[in-house]
Length: 321
Image 1 (cartoon, rainbow, N blue to C red):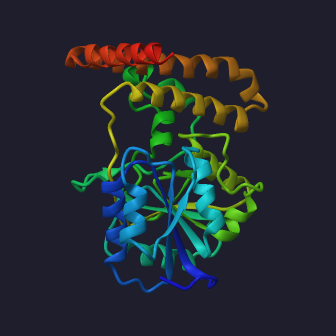
Image 2: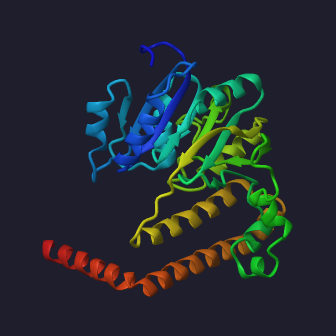
Image 3: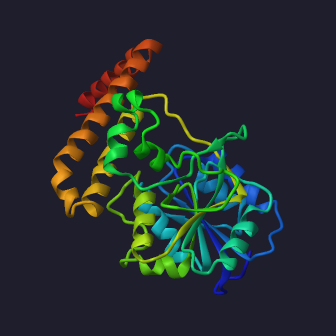
């Protein structure tokens, strides 16, 4: 850790929302290691009302910079808050539900220093059991939208559009150029981020959650900055699974973000002509995903519990009024 005012090699920006046990494990995985490169850690708390994240960071991690957003302002805006305070020539945006494995940060910094024309890189991501996690993919295409997770994909699972999007067949052990990197752990060069910063930061705040990492990589591509997958560094990533209808909200937000990305980047030429079909396809995917979720709730008896909870909440609000 370094004194204020000095430039450091790496700023680690961790955006947290009610993830205290994961956040503590993430911070410990970084702080227990001796790093060759100088680094700082910034935790941006997005209004964690349901746990003691803020108190724990303030009490137990005095060298970590704590930034309180004042509300749940979303993934992009939260990361922009951390970026504005970061002093590193390199910036790693990291989810709190991650574990940084031995030497990973030094490896990523060394790789970037050896490849000065690369704008952003992502590590090898794994689940806690060591299984490889998809973290680098191709940009979404109209064909991938038609075939991925649809009945057409079931009819033709080996179609080239899905394969291109999922990077099927790419070696998980070799560094390679990719289209976009998962926002759960993406390290970027400051010069590259500055070129896509429109005043509020490099992340587009029109995205509250989902697809903002695809958008970030797309704008880096437009500015001529390559993105690479670097498997010599490994970071574990827990993927949280909600047990109530918050999953329904996530489905809605995810598909709205997909449509936003399409409107921002594909509404030209043939893309404009295909826009009605794209909107219809995204809407259909959202509906199917919601039906699948509700079917799963019904089979597990969860639907009755959630609906009972929703009715109870409405009744409480009526009494308050």
